[in-house]
Length: 370
View 1: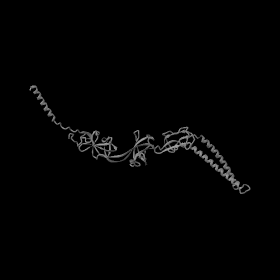
View 2: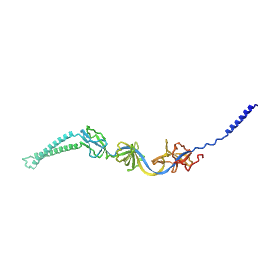
View 3: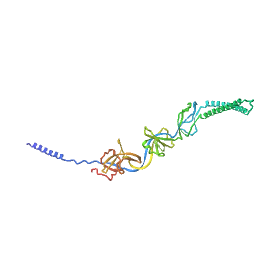
View 4: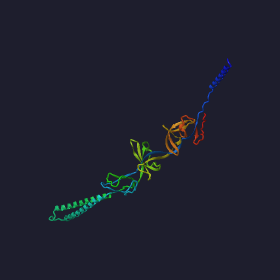
């Protein structure tokens, strides 16, 4: 065997031995990674439960104003929408020219009836005490007495006709029946008045209130006089109180109506939208920081840290919110540790390194290499 072949065989044996040794080397086990996260705990906090709803701003009492007369043209309109009007103030004036002609005619008829009545009564008085049948027959006496009664009746009819026309004259001025704000004006100069026409709509005393719709399951939790906070689209908030709770539930929507009284305010406009939150008495309830609540397709949940520092995802229901905390229903027990941030990236069973809210390691720190 040549020297070259001996060298080649020796190298092959060496390399083969190295490969066998490398094949028998066992890699050390990989370390389990622990994610460092801030934690807090479930605690009892005194929080006021609230009920939120929405609705429209409507007049507490809406008053329609129109004319009782028909066929008269509107001569003047004296007010505009938004004006605050005192009871009895003139809103519009009808053209009374034709009516005045009728009143003049009625006065003439009344004067004629008055003269005729005076004459008939005088003749009746003259024959009333005449006993001699040769002067006036019984028939003549009765006839004159009847003529006197007819004349008095004609006078009363003429007087009633004149009074009716004078009443119409007074109603040629359309007056506000109540004190309040003009919400709408639907009459213009030249329009012909009709009893079926609504000329003005008023909010009595200018008071508006919120007409809110409340689910059937929640309306029983409200009470008359209960405080409420109303939020306007402008961002302003007003304080109100429950004035009326409807005794009826809509059979289609299963919603009931609640009226919330509001103070006078220029930002309130009838027909506007607003939200309301009904306040309830504060009671101690389990609560966690808002940052601890995670939201997924299945609903809100908390990531709880168990005794072995493992993540456990627990579904919950949320309640009232206040001062950065949210009440929870059906969640973990009081004192349970919950993850504040990064919970969305943790799965059940993940190992974590708990940090107190502020970055310091918790006392229950578990070695990440355990």
